[in-house]
Length: 460
Image 1 (cartoon, rainbow, N blue to C red):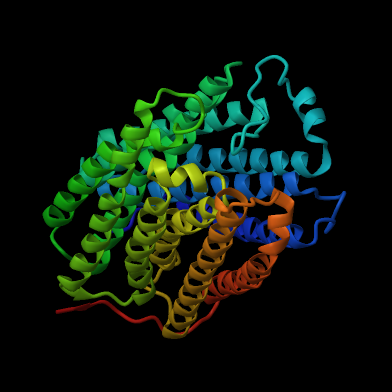
Image 2: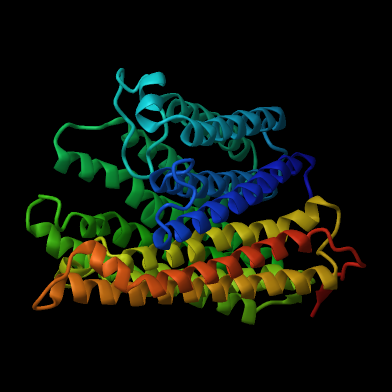
């Protein structure tokens, strides 16, 4: 059953994809700056391009999560959204604040931006991923609380399900852990400890709950498998996520000045972190194999299965490759970290957002699924982006292995910049593969504008 208030998800999905395109463009700019150091300098220095690239990633994923919540919560709760008007107002506040922040990064020197935005009153800027000026951070808190109030009130007045409960826990956790971005202790070790409370406990903690809830919702809709079966899987996945993810924070504490026991805690529990992602992969394929209907949206099914596989590879396998303390001693801060980061973010959070958009957007436009032509294009985009990301990860992994050998293990270690010159061939290959990824994303966009007669649901 469709609810009219679900329509507020549409602008969130559109904005998410638009910002995603911007993120990839700035990623390509950074990739060129790796091999052509003066590219676009001084107009867009590397540090600015990197801030825009990473901040756009975070913002567009949040737009996707919010759109997904606005879409699935009314359907799960079997009631209209508490306030569609509030959702629309928050959309524009969040979009304008995000746009102004990016414009600030691009047009004002960062130190000047900090001075103009009150960083001397409460020092929160200058930390990786949390570079946002104080007014932007405060705006994020206001938007997050109003958003959470809206969807929580919706759940309270309607049906309660495991999916909506897990999603709410994940979203509330996201908001709570972001509050640590306002705490910036002078002690560098403490600074890093609490910085990871935001970064790690988002991407390897509460975001995984959001991922699980979104994936479970789509799988129920496209497979027709009993809700009870999917909810049992969901409970198993989130339990494993919380047990391994919370204590797995310790793998960031190996070399920042914390006590040695973190090397054991971090190694043991982060080595277990691939388990929930493996469970998610088994879950997705198991549900599709047990499906009781052939849903016409084959593209959404492909994205759902891809999410399980790629999140396991990126967050699980590539995370495990360098998570044990004796290995991390050599690989810490190398391109191996970048390889893991790229595939993990794509496999887990980019793909689940695209899964949700692929499933929900046709319904928001009044059809069960896009046309066959549209879906063929969308599945091409899936393979272009996914294969491109696999090769980006492989090239960065190769660069990282060579970097570690030449710079840290060799009997005659070389300096950082000398090593960077020697691994530049991998950066060039990464750049061209990034172009293919952008082409895949543009194909994804085009697929929504291809007409034709949509297929209908077939029940077996």
